[in-house]
Length: 330
Image 1 (cartoon, helix red, strand yellow):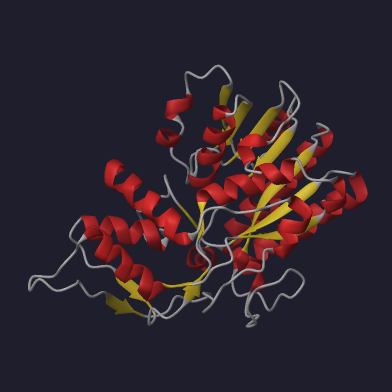
Image 2 (image 1 turned 180 degrees about the vertical axis):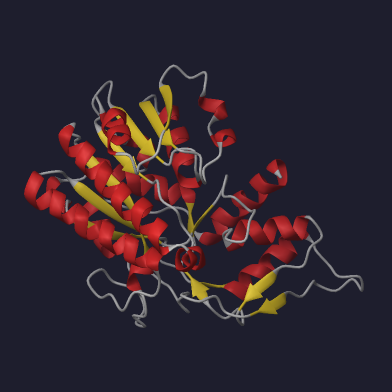
């Protein structure tokens, strides 16, 4: 069953934190298309107003500009809310190494503020974004919940801490929490700009702009790239999951494995990019990024069993949609 077939009580209110970001804005769009009431909380530090402008005239949509580092803001945002989809966070492993104190305040304290506000408002389900980075240097594939290695960045520490805090709120306060360990999400509205941009939108924009992309490392690193529609499904399936599944974290991916160099060549071929001699454009290469893991591939059997998660969007299917979106929107 896809997420569009899920039924929630009439007049349910969903709060999406980080709702003007890549994943958050897609969640807002999906919920509004299903006829639900949506409240978006974002401080627009990394999210973009343009991502949610199209929802402004929808009577079921409300936007709050606010910061999750402020507890009162979180409490006000949770007032009257049934389901919280907590996506607000700063991403990027390299940036977290440069800004550890901020990542602690924003990603950890901000999440605790949202947990506390949700508890006080008697929220039914608290679904939050974790990350595959919590597996650290654990080398075995596929990655399985409960088998984690040494954490390699402040960002990874922040996401692991979020999982532990959520577990405490389930254990002591009865708040149903569900952690979603995202594996390299991509798709429409993902920001292609800046030094910390995700690789797929960054490559697409560079190629379309006549630039030659740079690969960090040898290009032989692999990732379980996950299309945005699968992530939307996971969030909404978690909102309808049993309380028996609460207090835990789940891998959210497709379960595949793509090598970065193959993705690069696939994008070059799909966009028809050639060099001055008419040959397929070769990439540039740079040093590996500190804190990055070499390989990532998810075992999603736990999410299948406990959340009913059944992703339909393969990498091949999703990348075609993503390319078309960027062609039409860049």
